[in-house]
Image 1 (cartoon, rainbow over the protein chains, first blue to last red):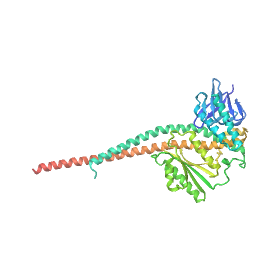
Image 2: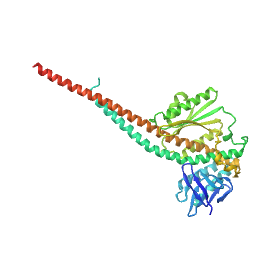
Image 3: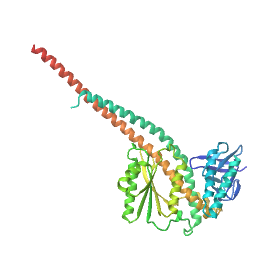
Image 4: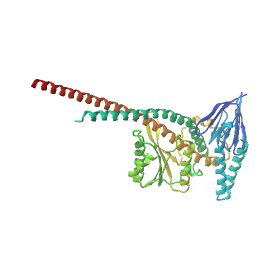
Length: 130
Length: 293
């Protein structure tokens, strides 16, 4: 199967950089799968699970927001925070949920409240998942 | 003339100092390696961020509808200088050279009739700027308790800048830090972060002019990305600074150790001369005493 270059970077380090066959990215407007020769897309990322399939193995990462850039030969994910699936910092996640709750409570108008609520829902979903 | 005992004491004290500077040099060398690794690990993210932003800015075309973080407020009257320095001294000219660059910049702006505010990240820079620009310093961010600079630290500074920007407290924000070139060369640098300077040199990254799909819309992505870029730039500056600081300290302490060595040699020489002179004097006294009998 055709492969493409996949890079997952967080501000602190490079988490993954290798050839991959398929990557499923949790986009803000829905998950999307990336295969080789994908059309160029730029998308923001919601808190969620990203899964990578290389020929031999399958890896999962938990992302807390970020940004993905897809081009036919490569996929770059700039994650705000990223953990390997089994090394998630649960305390940090709980803290994020707490912050999001406060944001919802503090929101001054409907628009920001809706946004904060969305963020909170996504985080809670993620928390339930891990 | 110092007595033998005084000389002995001085030699002992310089030796103790030399031991300290030697230890500091070795600690700095170990820390430098870690700081350098951290700076290098952060580089890919910042680079990708730059190229993505450049792509977006190009897709946006003219700046009329662009967010204010990219296009600016249309004025350049109020400047904010973010001066990043170390929390500790004893690292040669590291803090002074950053402070000097910031000071010159601030004076230049003032001559042109602009208003200047200074936000110090790191205590040492604040100490130095306090004398000449004490009135302009709005606050000092203290990272003394932080062992390894994390992205969270940068983000807290960035959030603060963004709130101030939204409150229209400044129009232009410039970041001062020291770029790490090598152990012996650190270059004090000024970098404008608001409005963002988008690199034009990204020809290799535009995928031959391919048209991107945006999800959500361009401006929504840009609105999300620009504030994050501020945090990334600050993070990069802090990491570069951390590496520079250790590099500067290492070479400063290396110098100090060498100087202490020279001083010990000189003191030992004069100690030995004096000791010999005293022995000779005592001998002469004994001999002339014996002759007198």
